[in-house]
Length: 225
Ligand code: ADP
Ligand code: MG
Image 1 (cartoon, rainbow, N blue to C red):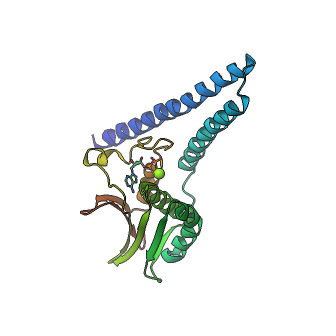
Image 2: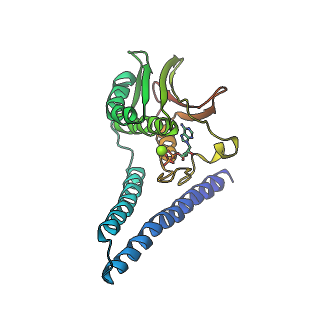
Image 3: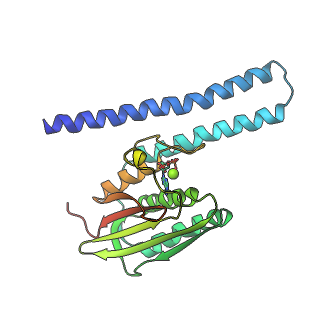
């Protein structure tokens, strides 16, 4: 019975994903088709229509590349990686984008903290979480990345000062395609959760008492095989 349950759960995630992909790709395709028909009819305002079509195509590109990332098999490329180094790379990628939004990113990590992991996948997790934190703060603010060493594991908190997460959507955040953003894909947290679970870790989400949210990544220092 347990096996059945696990299987039907998997089916429903796959089903959800397929329906979501179809929907997310059909909308921009419909709009591209419409604009192409207008152009075919020899309408003015070509520049404007080209721009919209490029935007729509970019939406499809983002969705497909995120999906390819999911379907990529877990490489067996796990090594002991210093969390501080890995996050250093991530911050280099995100700092200029954060600056544009008036967001400062602060790191407080134990320099020696290491985890047995696939570097590029765990980097992807932190990119997704820190991007969300930056995007949550419309008027700027700070993102704090705090690491702690526990017995047998490390915990890294991504803390933001955004509006926080309404209680009634908290349980939906890891579902594929759940997004509250105009141009979001709703795939970031689902992918992050999957990667962390593949590392036998956990992704926990909290509403901060004052303001903002905390996304906690818990990773075992070593893994059992
Ligand atoms: P996307 O960023 O494309 O919307 P995600 O899976 O990364 O997709 O996030 C899903 C949703 O979770 C977001 O649309 C937003 O509603 C919520 N969310 C994620 N991170 C935060 C955050 N730091 N603060 C508030 N809400 C968040
Ligand atoms: Mg996101």
